[in-house]
Length: 345
Ligand code: NAD
Ligand code: UDP
Image 1 (cartoon, helix red, strand yellow):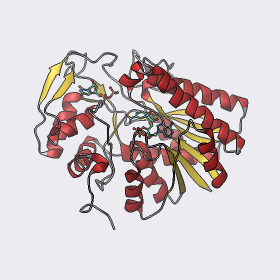
Image 2 (tube, helix red, strand yellow; image 1 turned 120 degrees about the vertical axis):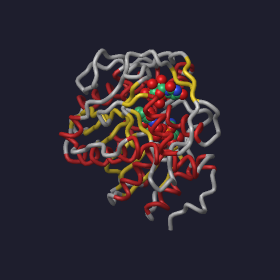
Image 3 (cartoon, helix red, strand yellow; image 1 turned 90 degrees about the vertical axis):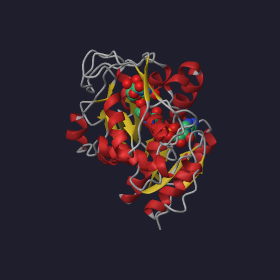
């Protein structure tokens, strides 16, 4: 029996593959490599000393998806595959609805056909939209503010309908807060295409000298120092959350949402200071206007995941920044960087 990981070559998927292999699961990865490189899979194999059965396949191609289920006995699916850039989704909504929603429907139809009813789905804290109160808990009404967020919201609803139609389904909807950091080996990490949208990849590229200056999007929010506050979570903690969610879906049925966050919020300026300390580099910045659609404060109430999944985030911002920096320093060109020196044997 194997676990199928869709989008397993990507940032969070590759870190989760390590945790899965280290927990002795057999893995099949399906990824179309539209936002990743097969080099990440090679490095995961290198780190763990275990092998992964990899399919370069697209969720929109029913035959390719079905082939994976024909050739393997799948016990559960961890479904990461999707497009994730908020700004791009505003300009290309149909591409986002098509890829994320149609891809998920084809996956679920194939799972039903082959009697596979266990799924862990990558949702996002973006489904909380603009809320009046923090911390954000799973009971709050969901209401996304952009097409990307709406794909997550709609998929959550589709998966709930699916369970209502057939109670054999067992589904965990994992609402990630702000994943950052990298595997401590420095061999895998986030490898954004072009200029990064997210804070930590942008800071990392300033620190390494690829970008000259960070723009801080507003210092007039009603927060401790005026800059936006987020719940940053180390990707290794997040990856481990998938193991705990997988254990839950394999041992029960139902559909449940869980926040995966630390419950602590840090401002942009706090993250810059922490990254400067971790890297020993100065991060020049400039205050510019607010980014459209940004919210002031977002952090999780993680108590449901703590109680029901027996999962808690353990790593603080020091490790998040140190591990992001190690990955950036040794892989200034992401997966295109040669890794002879770092290779784990
Ligand atoms: P990523 O882009 O690194 O990984 C996604 C992977 O899915 C990529 O390898 C890509 O090639 C693959 N993919 C996309 N469309 C596909 C398709 N049609 N068929 C097959 N493969 C396809 O992103 P990530 O940061 O690892 O995020 C993983 C999941 O978590 C995504 O669903 C994302 O929306 C969600 N998420 C991410 C964040 C974040 O900040 N990184 C936050 C909340 C939720
Ligand atoms: N941010 C910033 N400059 C950047 C990128 C992000 O000031 O170049 C701020 C952003 O306004 C927010 C925080 O950093 O307050 C986290 O942004 P990110 O895009 O990483 O996550 P999200 O806003 O999606 O939670």
